[in-house]
Image 1: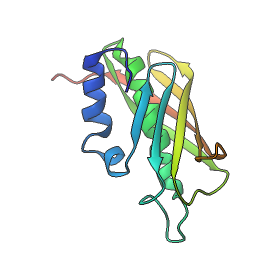
Image 2 (image 1 turned 45 degrees about the vertical axis):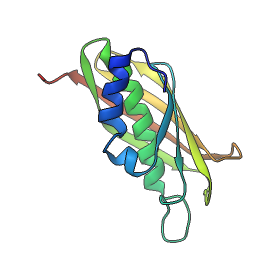
Image 3 (image 1 turned 30 degrees about the vertical axis):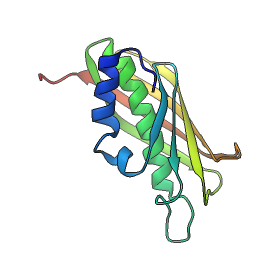
Image 4 (image 1 turned 90 degrees about the vertical axis):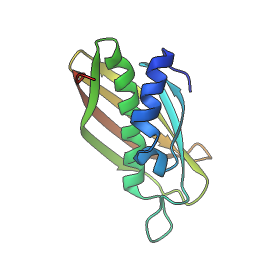
Length: 142
């Protein structure tokens, strides 16, 4: 994963993925900056009873990627990011392989960050579009 600093990368690894829901769902982040976050997730293990990618899994991928981008952005202010709103439109199902999410910022402020996230299947077909808003808060004392 590429990030703006090694310390920030370690924080993201422990806070966003390692030991958390992102790790459980098999999310791999390949690129992370305040301008773009890219990650992928296997369909297998993240399906609903009919074998289709679970809509909630798409939301988890979207929130993970947008939250990472918000965290990278918030880091410059000594702040942290917490998700406060997410929506998703599911366009088509995925039944195998991986889905890939690309998060790009809509707004990066001092108190709010909003991201558009597009999730596609292995053939490049749009599976889901999502929008996430994170509130940027002062980091708690260590």
